[in-house]
Image 1 (cartoon, protein in one colour):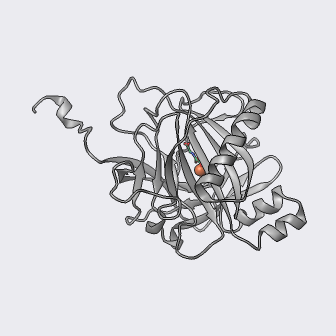
Image 2 (cartoon, rainbow, N blue to C red):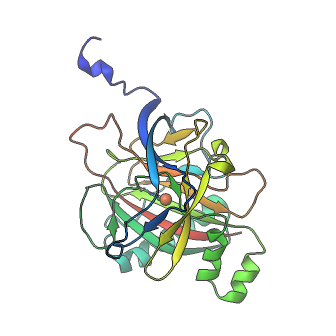
Image 3 (cartoon, protein in one colour):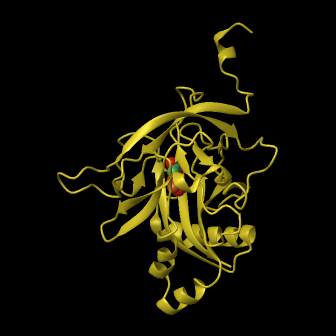
Length: 278
Ligand code: OGA
Ligand code: FE
């Protein structure tokens, strides 16, 4: 083929895209989860863009799973298609997510502690709606993971649950149409070195959370699931108390898909965050 279209090989099982990594400078990166007070930058820390190869997770010989790579695609619809009403999401969607996690992971108890709506239009202002994430991160750290249990359970139950295995899982779902722009990339947990993790402050109005930023490591193996549909979810491992060789977290970020046409619809999605007990 000699036409321009041959430049875009849609049958390829990988693409190259730019991801934003932290350049560690010895200081702790800080982000604000709300508009920062006057004079305070919304975030601190220097980032660098790295071109990485991102594999098609649908076509990998070894299917990605929560315990191997730290992420997993599951075919699972929802009764809900409009996730804009907070109360409805809690009443209808949270129980669906609860049941899904119990089924997939064999968990005995699930506590959903929040959810985030995203819309991929720069500068879009809508209460409670965020843009796709632009930096490689993991939502919790080995310190803040257990703290979440103490934040959301009565002290006695928290202490007892922390004796056993627990995990933090995000359930990520496109809203409205399959993902055409700003897909989510996930990093194989087995390609992450502990030295890549940089604890960062996430400042909320009422507390300070801790997340991991990541420094670049050429060994990172990235994947994405092309055109995730509203009847599919991506499960992300954010934390696992077990340290037995299984995935304990996964770096992830949205990226600009170089193959997305100009007519691609902006991505809408919802991610639900949960504590999972076994
Ligand atoms: C997440 C997350 C980013 C995005 O689900 O934890 O970071 O752009 N999502 O959807
Ligand atoms: Fe995240």
